[in-house]
Image (cartoon, rainbow, N blue to C red; front, side, top):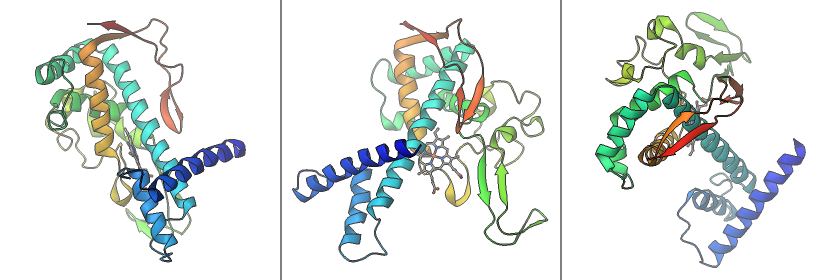
Length: 258
Ligand code: HEM
C-alpha cells in the first residue's frame, strides 16, 4: 500500500509541477479543476497561508476527486447495463426515448436533463445497487440523536443499501427492478423522505451528483443509440463490496450493433 501511495503521489506531483510551469509561462487558460486548486495553492504561496491549499492538500483533493468521481460513476454504468440486459423491456423503452429525443445525434446538455425514462432507470439502479453501500459518521462530542444519547467518539454506520431494500419503506416489490416507482419523482417513490440517498445527505452530500448523472446519461445514450445488449451466459450475479459495490465476476455483456 505504501508503495502504491508513493507512486500515486509521484504521478500527481509531476502533473502538478507541469501545470505550475505552464501557468507561469502563460501557456494554459487554466480553466479546469486542477487549475482552480492551484490558483488557491498559489494564493498560499503569496503569503496568505490560511486561505490557500498546500500542495499536499491539492494532491489529496486530486485523489479524492479521481476516486469519488471515477469508481462510483463507472459501477453505476456497469450495473445499469446489467439490469437493462436482465430487463430488455426497459432497455427498449430507454432506447425509444433516447432515439426520439436525439436520433443518432450527440445529446445536448438541456435535452439530457429532460430524459424521463433514463432518469427513472438510473435512480432505480442507484436504489438497488448503490455504489456506496453505507456511510460513516463519528460523534465529535456527546450528543442525542433520535432520543438516544451517544458519547463522543462513537462510530455510526448508515446502512444505505439496507434502507434502499427495506419493504416497509419501498413496498413489497422492494427487491425488484421497477423504475416506474420513480415516475413521479423521488419524493413520491417512497413513504419516507430521505430514504433514497445514494449520494449521501446533509452538508457532506456528494458534490458531484449532478455531474455523475449527466455523465452516466451521456454514456448510456451513446450506447443505447448504437447497440442492443444482453448478458453473456458466463455472467454470474454476485454483488460484492470493495469500497464500492461491484459485480464480483465482472459484467460480460454482448453488444449487437444496431
Ligand atoms: C454515481 C456516482 C456517485 C455516487 C453514487 C457518489 C456518492 C457519494 C456519496 C454517498 C458521498 C457522501 C459520502 C459521505 O457522506 O460520507 C459522496 C461524496 C463526494 N463525492 Fe460523490 N458520488 C458519485 C459521483 C461523484 C463524482 C462524479 C464526483 C466528482 C466529480 C464526486 C465527488 C465527491 C466528493 C468530492 C465528495 C466528498 C464531499 C464532501 O465530503 O464534502 N462524486 N459521493
